[in-house]
Length: 316
Image 1 (cartoon, rainbow, N blue to C red):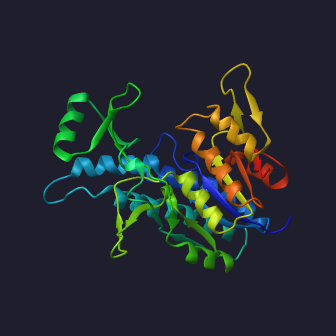
Image 2 (cartoon, helix red, strand yellow):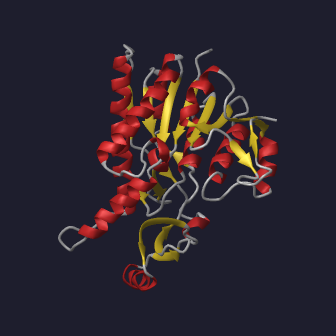
């Protein structure tokens, strides 16, 4: 198989399960590296992105618990940066160890990534992304009064802080990422969707904002900008399904982007689960028709390399 430029978006199951300890997450990523190394053995060039939702939530809990006048809690954009750095460090080490075991001489570099969003994005007026701990209605009301943050009831489990999830416009470090890939380096970047920043219209200064960028959409933008041959979204299932969980459930194998858009309009995919993944896959193929997007599971990687596995999205 010919050498390919591949962007791989790792799902949360590749990093964390029930055990949120650093040791457990490092062990999960060591196993993940064993799957990813197969692409490198195949001669492919990799750009790897990852989620950080649970890690940001846990760090926010720690920050909230320790918050004081002397030691104030850090803002959300900084927490995104911290978790992007820690997870990338764990994955970088796991990949380097696996490369050495396989006697492959290749560099792995992590790039902490700033992702430009618009200050006028409608998401800032309608925050919807839940983060942090569950509170009672009374506790949420008090927090809203004290901090000005917005809280919403979350599926009967309590009230949670919600923040904006604006669409990514640009990735600030894309030129550096391209240069690293062209030099043969494995790049880990755009972790957790990257750190959301806005640009001052007058000074052009960048400033972090309290928001989170969807990791699949950020990964799609990255795949588009580096002109990837293949954009792979790894999740908990081998295929995307329509009529999911019903007797008429059907897996999607190869599908054209227009067909996938029609299924999205029909409401076939859950907003908090598969919808951002299929939207990212469709957007990538629309912007880069020579490329292909695949949605599948981490465990299905070996089949993906040797055959047409997973849900494959292709141009019309």
